[in-house]
Image (tube, rainbow, N blue to C red; front, side, top):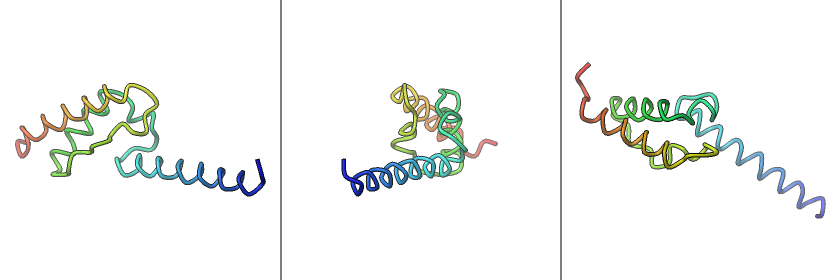
Length: 88
């Protein structure tokens, strides 16, 4: 691999990592391990609905495993939050 390809690959990796960390920060968490649990996903969905935010279509994109389970937990929390919005 040529030196310029290595630099480009390195920059791409840095940008991707920065983007993923930005997504975590946007979701209100410091790192991916914090959001990659079913209870955290459910709570985030519930909180987003209560605050009137749009539902994230890819909540678990930064999680290394069980993304479908986490997406379902987020969606369930969001739907619960919508049903109980404004009830304290």
